[in-house]
Amino acid sequence: MGMSESEERILNGRIWADFCDRLKAAGDLVSAKGTPTDLQNRALGYRYLTRLLRGGLERAVDYADPQYPGFYRLADETKGVLNDNPDNYYENCSIDGRFDYRIFGTRGTVPWFSIGAKGGGGTVDQMVSTGEIDSSQIELNDDGTFEIFMSAKPKDKNWLQVTEDSTNIVVRQTFGDRSKETRAMLEIECLNPERPNNNLDPEKLEAQLGAALNFLENTVGLGLMWTLDYKDRTLNQLPSHDQAVLQAAGGDPTINYYQSHWALAPDEALAVHIPKLPECQTWNLQLSNFWMESLEFRFFDISVNKFTARYEDDGSIEILVAHEDPGPACKNWLNTLGHSEGGMLGRIVGAEGGWPVEWKTEVVKFADVKS
Image 1 (cartoon, rainbow, N blue to C red):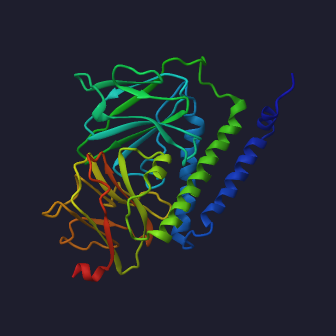
Image 2 (image 1 turned 45 degrees about the vertical axis):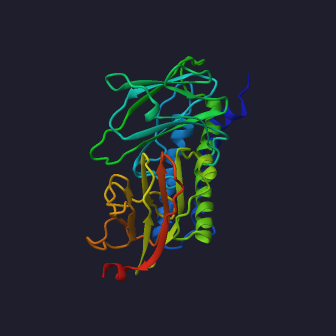
Image 3 (image 1 turned 90 degrees about the vertical axis):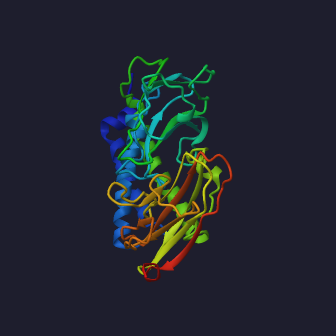
């Protein structure tokens, strides 16, 4: 029996050469129309490609088998994607709606987490929710452990619905104060696999490498499309976003999103006023760079949330986005870390009602604020 074309391409090396050629061509995305031309943002753009490649390879190759699933992290401390939330610990997992799964673990002390099954075409803008469950709905054992069953058929408790369209899971664990809280520890298993092992299938490798590059190209393309639209329509504003658009990209249906782009001259700052919010699990506002990677939240205050904010007497919140520390009179300062522009995203999670609430913004002179 002769070799298939895919087998020949592995043995003669064409699979790797073509992968590298396509990866090289992806570098043109960093200098596409509308992208910044300065040294810093170009360098960040190329670094962004390396980070998306890491995430894409984990997604499409290393953790791609839905019969032997495992949690991995598309967004983490060194991989930012589409205004990833600095307050979140994200986890992802590939699944197949034809199979049943069990998620098990310990609750931890993180105030809130959600597990969403997503379906669609598998691209970053086709991740429609097919089932959701969050920590407020999960019945726990006395020792804090729990099980969640994922299936098309309903279960008596702790059931996360999947459908034939379900292809992946997104976990969001949302911290109030990371230094004081512990995250839930999660594991997953497929209850009815058909394959005896998860050995690499050589026939699938080229498609998997292609899917990793699809993720890279589509993520950059979607982020750039959003950014240019925000710069044109809502620069330095924070309107309530078209929720369906963000939910189609994997957003949580219990979250109301405010997303836009900011740009400030060296002598400017952005004042944000948030009226008193309805009761909710949490809220936050974050800054990102031009490529929509959240700024370095491990070491700097680039976001503020329900638990870290300092409030006005009437319950409202005043936030200043500025290049320098405005001093103690400013209750909530978000550090731009020297960037002249970038993404910004606000969230209200699990509000009981009364939203969307209008978030007001104003570009001001930094000297006036400090004085």
